[in-house]
Image (tube, rainbow, N blue to C red; front, side, top):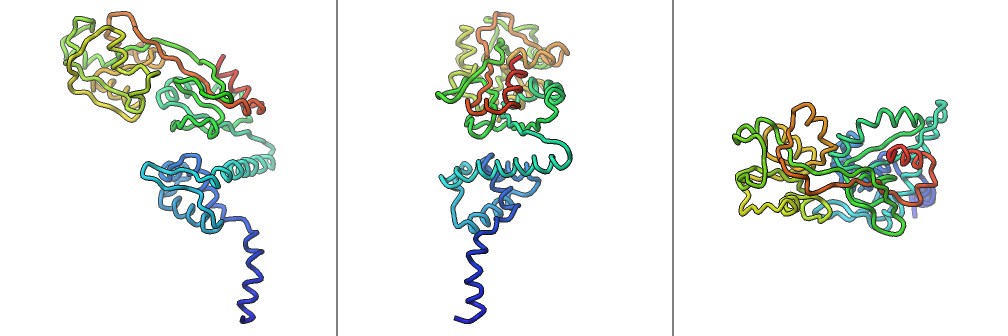
Length: 308
């Protein structure tokens, strides 16, 4: 063996002890939380290809597969699941150490919340929350996988499942059909009731929630209202409740919405609730969290503020 090759071989143990590249670790941590390279890229302000390349470089550096690439997205391997909390904690400690040098210490709290609930309920409350918790950094996302291990708090329409998952009900309100005043006028109607021709209406659906028995879909609402609709024409479905409601506001048709989350639009006349009968369904929203997060004072404080 040549002297140069022998020198290189002697260095290999030391090279293995070096930390992986920081950008590769950041890409892995974001991709592991999102389970999607594109979503991670948006968070890091890079391309999805760059995230994928960094993750591949990290896997080669560690000589460990961290993700299973599937047609519908990513799945962490057992090694990746063990690595993620350690890397996330390391980044959190690094942020806190940096802020400590500046005389501040921020505690990160991660929230996942449905898009409509986020825009219409959480964001209006966020300034007051930030004022009440000046040493807290809020990380808010609207992609829910209902895995409390990935967030500190989930705000969702279903209570938690499992002995270690706790739930607090945020609120409950009636669910009402809403549409734009212009759409109702185009039908030549002032209101809707059991005698209206429901089969001629354009019904707008929140696609990810269809088929989930807890959610008040159009099928459940019509059945609870004792309305028999032989055929529904001109319907459309959307990726989330915000898109569905915006389509209704623009005259796309009739959407179902929790009244509390659309009351501002109803008061402003941007939407109308044309159904004259009693509301047959109600919708509840819950705070979900693991028992373990109650060890952190900022999470306990935020829970109390949100549930107040």
